[in-house]
Amino acid sequence: MNYLISKGWRPIAVLLLLFILWEIIVKLTKVPDWLLPAPTMIVNEIISGWTSFYPDLVSTSKIAVEGFLVGTTVGLVVAVSLHLVPWIRDSVYPLLILSQNVPIIVLAPLLVIWFGFGLLPKIIVITLTCFFPITVAALDGFKQVPYSHKHYMLMAGAGKSQLFWKLEWPYALPSIFSGLKISATYSVMGAVISEWLGAEKGIGVYMTLASSSFRTDKVFVAILSIMVLSLLFFAVIVAAEKYFIRWQSKGGSVE
Image: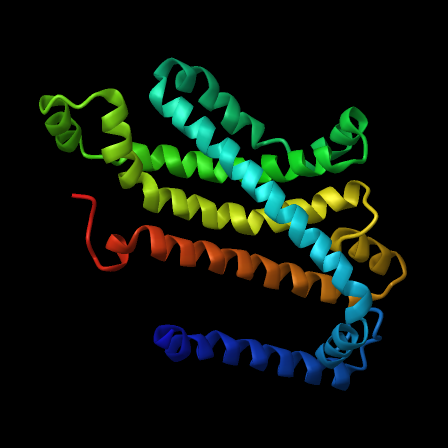
């Protein structure tokens, strides 16, 4: 906490400075509000429109959490499977990389055609967004285990299961949490994209309606809320990381 207080004021000060410059430039150049609203106008919209915006925020948060849980679970299962069964890794890993070259925004309409406008296509979109970072991070973590450690455990008679749970999994935890941080921020983006497909409420719906009516102040409210949600999810993963791998924060190691 002390670290956050001592270091956190710097980015906040830079952010405030940017907002002040933004406000001054918009006022001096008399840019139309529909083109670029001033920060004070955006803040006013947050306060005055909070009651109507709150249900959209809650809806997006809920679906982002659900999609994140599904996506990271799928990602970890895939990573463990690819790690433990080499022939599956050799066969599937190139296809996983190839699948990431297809933009989600292109796949989304197909998912609607196949699965309708319900919850399932939205969860699939977020899962596709979240699973790859955690899969790649976990696989890299498993690879980083020193061969001498594996050799020592095998010489001591450890089985494949013991080798994985007592050495490879703990060693990969820092990498896994790195992947979780990326997936957590991606989950909000995936939730918004999924709401563009068709939803009754959510930040994606709010943003679509705002942009179609040239309410750029509302669009900025949506953008700010996405940023805050992503930071919040990121902070939760950082807190979990500090709890589950306390040995790393103390400068220790698995060894």
